Image (cartoon, rainbow, N blue to C red; front, top):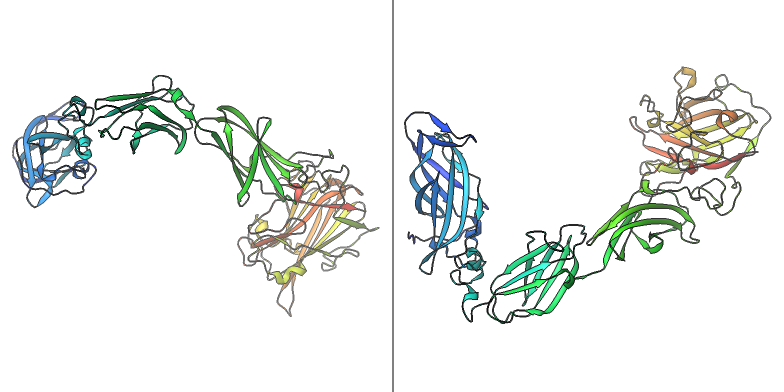
Length: 615
């Protein structure tokens, strides 16, 4: 078989495409028989077609292969069709007219590619494909198949296509002739691990290198073997192996005694003991819980009972480090958040990690940390305690004045506050929506309170462009206030179900019958307790066109768990809706202001309340 028609080298698909252009249809009956798998093995309605075969990319792009010396042999449904010639005007396609295929049936193709090399036929690869061919359809494209290059003319362990690509003689085994180019077989049994990912092995020899495939797992550890393409005797330097896991080098070996010293075949064997494991490292990352720590913090890691290392702040509130010199096995890793100036422990988190050979990493999230540490034993966690090193009740942020009696009816008095209540405390910490908050109203967001030993009377005054009330039961999206309290000032990181609560009151006029109030989520009760009373009223200034909303809330001390003379948690927040729909901003009296992102901790964490005492 000889075909010397010219053909130019091209780049084509990764897989074989067989294009069948139907030029005529043969007549006959329509009966056919099928195998149990559904493949048609006989059909009396063949179709005469032009069979076209495209050069596989593995051959079309191979170095040193003479593209003009290619030809193809095709077997169709078990019958050899012989050789195909390149199609005129398109050297990427080999074709033949009048090929008889099974119509309305699956046709199977086996295509073997040959190169005319050194006066002989050299098989380079084979493609197998199956395609359903429908009667009367043109063109028909065969888009399946797999390429197999397993042809080795000289039985030296190197495929013909690889030898042609590498420029060696595919008909002559280098180890069979004196003075020929020597080859090398590397066999390696690597350390047994365990590994964090499937290990790979790289070789380097005489300035050349590559990766070794892992065909099996035998012996002490995974077993690797590779036949390195032929080299000259001058490439006889020491063999180096590098063990890689997850893109990281974890072990290596430089073995000067294992060299290529003659022109025959060479086998270099490495055992697990030939490899030197590098330092095993553990990468640790933690996103610190979103808290107001009040003081600078440091984060450190401990492995078991020994110090692991300090974590560095890399972005936002994320800390990370790499802890080296780890042995394999199960480890208990502890992260600690401490106050930088005196090492006071704010919080800690613990996780178990099984350290393996390769990249090891462990991440901590906010939910992993425990903030219950109480250095002075006063029942208040360090992170929440204004004086965490001194036992006893903390100094209050405000002392609420006592009055002998308060008697008034805000409805009848058109919303005027009872005598003695002033509003000196500014609600100015913008927590949500700092970019849209209108600071011109800042000085008008105020609150104040008095008590008579039985009730706490709170007044809140807020200025606004216009009050909105269009969010149904989601009243926190309207103009509204929230009042928080923690009766016994325990200020845990979560609501205790005893006396921690918040009440939400919208900017609505009680006299219209629309006024509502609801207890916020996590409160110790879902219903507003008996004895609470509230009122809200908004009025517009005719000169400036702005609104002022006033709120009065009467809190029964016993129901709230508040004791005269004892500290309790307290805060006031204002919801602001400027244009209907969802709220635009939120601000608080004690809760810290945002710094670049919206924050709102008090609804889930009572420790963000201030501290009041009733005189």
